[in-house]
Image (tube, rainbow, N blue to C red; front, side):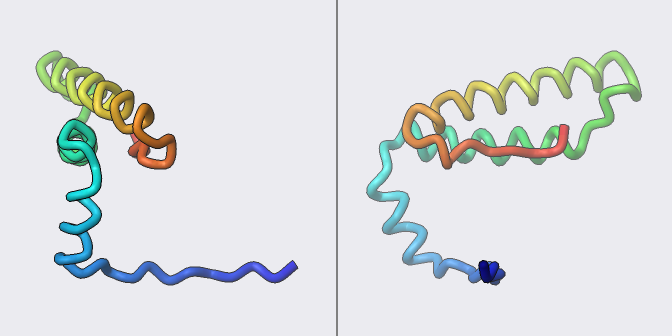
Length: 83
């Protein structure tokens, strides 16, 4: 079996807009929320202090809520990140 390695290709902005126009607004908002939560999870250190731990857990909860909406629309949309 031959394994092909696919090179990521950037999507032009106009094409991304057209794709987002076909999706429900709640799914688009959930995708934005998931990206923001992943950014927060990567920024915070959960063991640094009690406040950071609470913020980290809050970001994980936001990611879980967004992923629930994304998975309901299509399972491939679920965001995964190193937590």
